Length: 488
Ligand code: FRU
Image 1 (tube, rainbow, N blue to C red):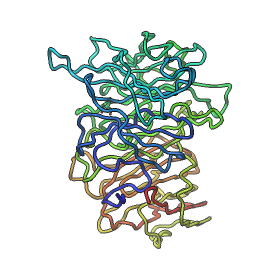
Image 2: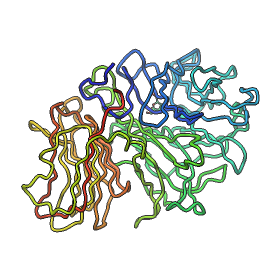
Image 3: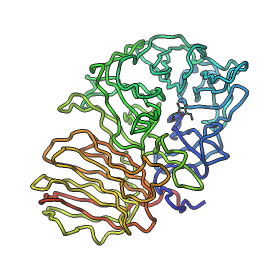
Image 4: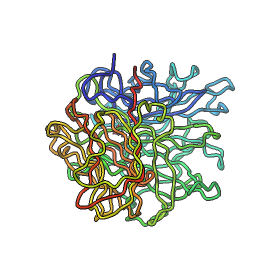
């Protein structure tokens, strides 16, 4: 296993072989970040779901471990979360601490073939290496709700109990528990709020300081929305900002407001790590870097799908109000091997300051001051007749990724295209870009604008260009780092 197959990401997590979708059960415990994931161990398309498992000490280098949870008499193992039960509230750990996974068992009703989704738990006394399913499974069921899945659980200090957010049709239901085994309904959120373009999935709920101020905190609710054929975008993730008192979530924005965590097509079902130590203080999340629209037919052979890079999320006051910002985890800096540095240049059409660079696994941090140009940015993974454009559009005041001519796209007619971000109207425009053979992640203006897109270019496409259109732009600084593989 050398991770050198065509399109294989070099510094993103992907399974050694076969199909992966959502990240699951992310928890930090005794020096290790656990990452479980929706996994089909016997095929490269979606199938009977298991929880694959990997661990990392730095969120960058991953060690694959044997499958964590496999289907059983209660059904397949759909998405869910994991927590550290520090005080043995469950009674599973003889007074010590241990890991509890909370997930959806998915099967069909015995007397019909209608789907049935129920919540179950499992525990591990050996740091996640082996798991025992609770004898009382399922621990939560509601006969009348068909789509009823993806429990995310956290400890709510003020009310001294566990809270579960669960996707139910097109709302989020909130349940509470003292012991992780018996759950009580608390409230429901979502009717009339945000986007209802598809079924709601994979919620997460957590508190963050606004502008780094611990005296001013807000709650953030993530909700992924499944693919609906009537939409252009396929599956994507929205978020709400508001308050949570241990019982119910109250949205700060008007009902019609829709906030997307990402303006590309390939960041879905993302949720955050549980139990990151307080002295670290970060809220870190990862998403599945694909889209249900075409996830099953992307042109890879041995495996299918990767995760995004892990990202730190925060809340920032912007012109439009408090908004989510995302930035790459600093641990990724350890992958930098070669560096190209440019300072104070005026970029003009026809001169490519990056004509000597060849790579398809790299990071760019560049800051521009707007001048007369109408558009500027980077063309990456260039060669033959292919290129992917990562730019800023001055007139429309947004970042964009254009993968129209990025490479292989014939596997689905909605793959090729250009994706625009939200509005960014500052004078200084900052790109932070990660390219890893078959993916683009753009963090515009310190993470206020994020675009995550897959691409499938020719392997030889390693040229790049710093381009400007219809005028000039001032480049304050540019750092380009070639990044090394995490697998070798
Ligand atoms: C989201 C999702 C979840 C479900 C899982 C099944 O991508 O549809 O709602 O638990 O995938 O693999």
